[in-house]
Each structure stands twice: as C-alpha cells, then as structure tokens.
Image (cartoon, rainbow, N blue to C red; front, side, top):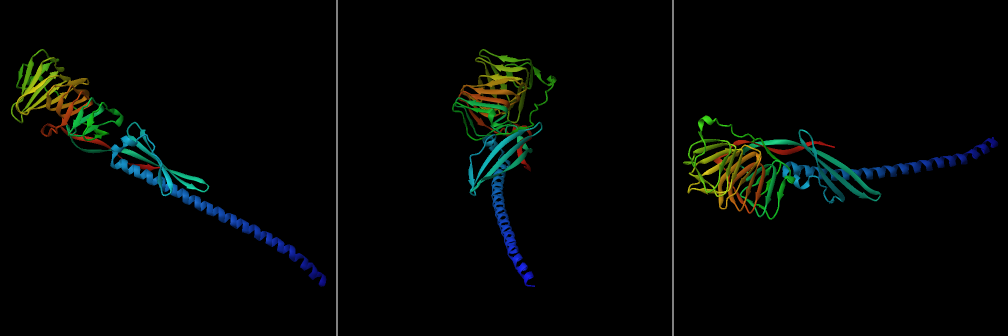
Length: 366
C-alpha cells in the first residue's frame, strides 16, 4: 500500500508540468490571436476610412459635373492636387471614355490613410454616362453658336451674349487681347442644321437689278464691283424681302450694298462676301442663309447692323475694324481685326427648334 502511494506521488509533478506547459501555450496563442484580431480591426478601420475618403471625393466631383457640365473643360484629363480630408489624403482623376454612340466620364478617386505600419489606400471609381436634355432654342439665342471651331483675335470683343459651342474647349482659340464679356458654353448640340426649302424660281423675278423691291431669284454667282451700289428695299415693318442667289453673292472693291426700309431682308446664297454696307434711316434687319460649306467674309469700315448669319456647314469671318450687331450660327467662326460684336436676340425672325445639351448621370460605381 505504501509503495503504491509513493508511485502515485511520483506521477503528480510531471503531470503538473505538462498542464502548465499546455496552459502557457494556450495563453500565448490567445494573446497572439487577440493581437492579430486587433491589428485586423485597426487595418479594416483605416481601410474603411480610406474608402470613404475616396468615395466622398468621387461623389463630390460627380455632383459637380452633373450640375455644371461646363466644369469638364477645366478638369478633364487631369489629376487633382492632394487634399487632406479627415487625417487622410485624397487624389481625384477625371478621364473621358469615347464610345461610338455616347460619351462617358470616368472619375477615379484614391483615399490614403497613414498608419504606424505604413499607408492604407482604397479607390472608388464612378462612371458617368451622357444624356441629352432638350429645350426650345431660338436660332439666334446666343451671340455666337459654333459647331466646330472658334477663333477670336486682335482686340476683338464679343458683347451682350454668351458663346455656345458643340465641341470641347480645345476647339476655341482666343489670342492677341480678344475679349468675351460673358461665357463660353461647351457641349451644346442642336439639330437646327436644315436650311429652308429652296423656293421655286417660278415665283421670283430673274436677275438682280440695282433696285430690288420684290422677291428675286438669281441664277449663278452674283458679283458687284467698281463703284456700283445695289439697293434692297425691305418695305414696312413686318415685310420680308427674299433674294435667292444660286451661287456666291459677292460685293467687292468700292461697290456697296444699301439696305432700306423697316422690314427683313432674307438673302440665300452658297457664300456671302461683302465689304461695304450702307443703311437708310430706318431699322431694317438682314438674315443670311448660307447654303454652302465654304468661307463667307463680312466687313465694313462703319457698322454692320441687325445682321443674323446662319451657315450650319460653312465658315463665317468678320474682320477689319467692324462693329457688328446681331448673331451668328456657323460651323466655324473667325472674328479678327478689332471687331466689336454685340448680340441681338432676333425675336420675331428666329427659327424655332430644340437644342440638345449634353448632361450626365451616374451609371455605376466600380
């Protein structure tokens, strides 16, 4: 009996040591697990913070573009400077995605949070898809409407109205102290590209005489040179005098175009080139419908009054110390040589239609 007890006492000490070692291992494992879990929680918190910094930045830029599409001209293709937000850093890049049938904008925002172990970052990408907003447009709603290219130079001034252009900001060239009183609106697309239907010559007198008082059709180019003058009498207010030239309308040298009356002169031609204008005491209005895709050049040493130019496929150049009031709609416009251009709205002779304004909405997050 005493021998059995002695053997039992001999087993107790090793058993206690084994239990102690097991408990120590378990304690160390628990401590390591707790430490790892703590690190993971801290990392996830920092990553979540980085994510929300990125998301807030991306959504702020998206909201700005949605509400003010014209801001794209300043931020497209660029990366922002680092911004500090909630002890983290934000970088935002805006890219254009050109697809066959639509334009998309990609906003990539990166949030970064500094930690004792280094930097934790996350990215949020928002894709904006383009959509069209339609509203009624009077043809001469803007001082200038340009489909493709605008060039202003040599102290020219555009006053009284804004400039609308259907393309991006790199299609505008402003140099040599040219000035714009208001603003340039980009990505304004309109379907007003159709010219009035060609009237049958049966309803017109053939050939342009020195004094035009009735609707007139002229076959081929019309050229007036030397010291000759052609007079257009538009009649009383509300009357429309239509002149159709099946070619170029050209007044050169010292020749002059004189516009009388209080009505409207509608002159249709493939191109229009006029260097000298005179007016009667009344306030007549001139509208040029330019059918061709060439260049029309207008100048006057005094003033071009109440003149509206519609050349959806052509280029219009106004030059040579001219003061012009009216509005121009053209594929390309060049204003050069100390020209002062003042917008008039042309209310009673505007063509009505719709303008297609490019806007954006959120398509998805990535």
